Image 1 (cartoon, rainbow over the protein chains, first blue to last red):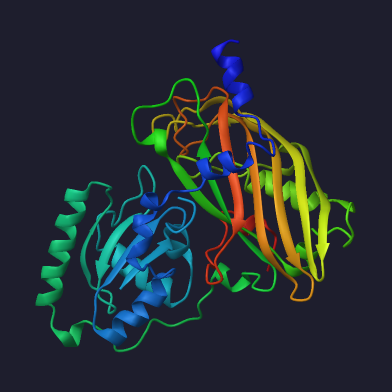
Image 2 (cartoon, rainbow over the protein chains, first blue to last red; image 1 turned 90 degrees about the vertical axis):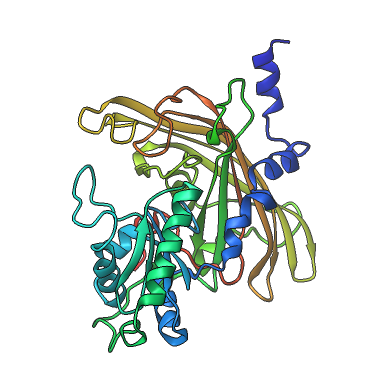
Amino acid sequence: MTTLLALLLAQELTDASFEKWRDHVLPKSEELEWAKVGWRASFWEAAVEAKEKDKPILLWAMNGHPLACT
Amino acid sequence: MPAADEVHHLQRVQGPEGTLFRTIAEQGHYGGRTKPTNTRQGVYAASASGILLASVNTNDPAKMRAMLEKALSRWEELPKEKRAPQEWPKGERVRWEDLCPSDGLVLRVHTRDLPREKTPEDWRAQAWNRDFAWFRKDEMLSLLPEAKPGAQLDIPQPLLVRLARLHLLDFVRGQTWLLEEKNVEKAELRATVERVEGETVQFRLEGTVRTSAEGTWPVRGFADMERPGKQTRGYEGKLLGRARFDRAKERFQAFELVAVGRRWGGTQYNGRGDDLAEAPMGHVFTLAGSGERVPPAFVWAYGWR
């Protein structure tokens, strides 16, 4: 069997391979360290809280929400 | 106070948070910039009163650290009476999150390349991304077959077309652009009831999707945006999943939908400029956490108001 054919067969989605592909795609715990920062999901939430608690705002602003697709 | 937010929205929205963001951003690293784009993407440290402490657009840890240290130093020098606003900017807040279907179905969508013969040796080899997919309550209920073993339901086409054009996209390495309805060549998903236990219905999902588009657009970021070439892009994949629904509570207890397929082509910012050939890609749809309300990347194309 050629390498390419073997690869194609190995990538097939079946009941048997379902969990393998699911686990391959989902992020591992070490890939989610950034999420532990405690990001407020909107700039405004942080601004209001910053005023209340006399703290600076740290805003991560991306094209695409950083907590989602960016 | 750490926050993450979508810069395109903040740059344009009327209301207090847009006004405050633009006040801060114009003091920052991209203040006044219009070329090659007018994005104000980056990391900003600022006071609630709108005074910029420091900012940068980088993923270099050393540069980020330097920015944070500068910001902290400026914060400590900033008199307390200047840190908070006398009053907030005027206007009402408008957020897509207001449309989050809390009584419907909110899914996380993860995507990653699947194993292939030639893998890049840099960050792209491990790249993955996340989005969200929303279904209103009536849409969620339209996913459910009759509650008896063996009952089948073909998932309504409008929902599958939305899934295909807005979610089964190549955003593994970065943002991409949506597809049009005409680009959806095939979208089939069938639900088959496996088991009914009291009010709980367990069902299987199985289907296929194919999308294809052609035209002229850039695929190498800024490098070819002035002289884009002819392009094609698309996806063909198989979907397989399982879900469990509580009819009494009208909530999903479990939802896993995996898509395995092959993508081709690229778009301006999705990092495929040197990787346009057909290659394997996976998506996984799972239940989002109860507090997760970040809108889908293309929520504006849902047609919801």
